[in-house]
Amino acid sequence: MDHPSSKSSVEASIESWQDAIESALKSSGVELVQKVLVLRETASTQEAASRAAGSTPTLVVADRQTAGRGRLGRPWIQGSSESDSGLGIAATFALPGCQVPPPRLSLAAGLAAHEACARSLGSRDVLGLRWPNDVVERGGAQRKVAGVLVEAVGPLILVGIGINVLHEQDDFPGSLAERAVSLRQLGSRCSRLSVLLALIGELDRALRASPEEITTRWSALDTLVGSRRTLIQAGRRYQGTVRSIQPSSHIELETSEGVVQLPSLTTSLVHDEN
Image (cartoon, rainbow, N blue to C red; front, side, top):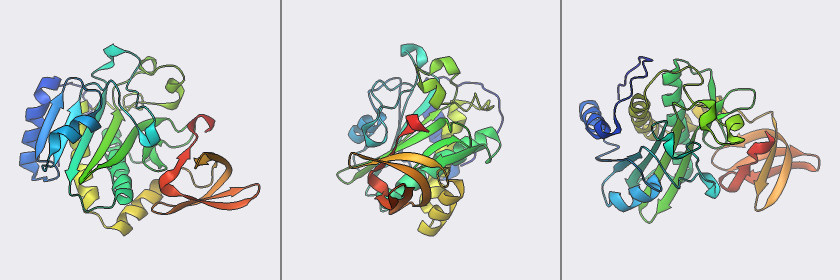
């Protein structure tokens, strides 16, 4: 799907998004989404998409989430107050009967978010992927730009993607200002709608890629291998140097007690110790 490449930050009203998205879908021929629902506010786009989709591939977008959530039950915080609507992207793709295994779908969604963000910056060198699908700055504190949540609800697969687009530092509450960053802070002047349209096209492409291509592309963007990290698995903390990541199976960590292999799907990174 083509999208505006200009870095003008002209923001279309949220009320105009539905027509713009549907028009872009029709002209591009992307079949990933067949129904679009744009909301001014919702508790969670995941929950709204679960209710709305039925048997139809559906995209739910909200101007603001009041109870958004991330991987392993963490909250997804869009900003510091009720006035922060209009800053980021909160989107869920509801994919009934999706045949892509959830682990590969999670990686593909991370790649799609990365590519959409990189396009808005005009460079693929600024951002990387932190296990399993956080889009982050390369180097330094690896501040987070975007995150992904994949959930299964019966035959329905929900792919939630949140992207910080227009935030300034004061829009992030408390210590989050040191761990999160927006595309605007990194130099982008793209609108939220243009980033969203890019995301739709990139996710459609990523879901068509082979498992080998997904793994190769993800590994090239990895930011953890070679760094010292604290990981949690089954309630236990492990600290050491990340030796390798096999995205669909395990993370290999060299600790003071030897090398351990932690299952990828249930291992969590301790972010405040980065």
